[in-house]
Amino acid sequence: RQRQMCIRDSDQVAAVADLLRSITPAGSNLLVIRTAIGAAQRVALAMDRSSWPGMVGTIAGDDTIFVATESAHAQKNLMTRIEHATRS
Image (cartoon, rainbow, N blue to C red; front, side, top):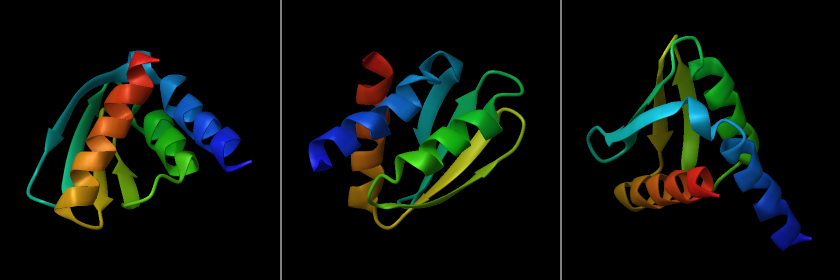
């Protein structure tokens, strides 16, 4: 069941992968994700539904998402997860 859950989690983000433009770390606990115009809330919702560990929360505007992470390590792991999910 756990493995099935992880696949579904990645699918949430993979479904909106074409809307992502860039991922940039800002400090040790924040990621700034740029999306297509008008897509930030949709992408943030997919990320929130993914329930990935280390992600504290998201704030979405029009084309930018701020993602708060628990630590610098969690930030790096989350970047890797997003990049992996978007390649699937």
